[in-house]
Image 1 (cartoon, rainbow, N blue to C red):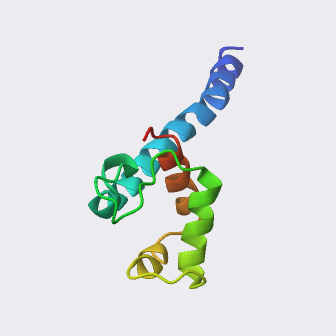
Image 2 (cartoon, rainbow, N blue to C red):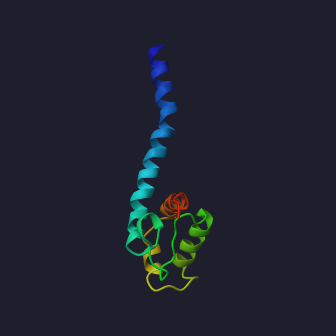
Image 3 (tube, rainbow, N blue to C red):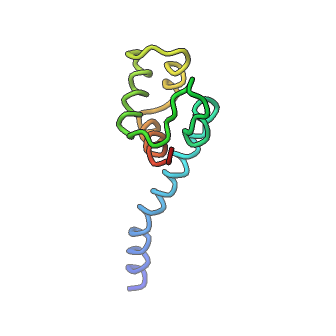
Length: 100
């Protein structure tokens, strides 16, 4: 009985732990955007688009367009190729959740 309870507790906690790991990974990946787009996507200049608070699907579409070459860029076409589709989803979700 104890083993079953322990197993049930572990199974129920697994998504919480995985979610926390995804959030940490997302934040760490998004930190690479800070050099140009500002901390947490809050750009301090109008020369670079702010990403904080933009809809996730909009960020994903932009990154995919850069990655495939459909959208011209100075450096984003190269940077975007360094991310998997899952990583792009994580970063986009993180930045979408930030306030402007």
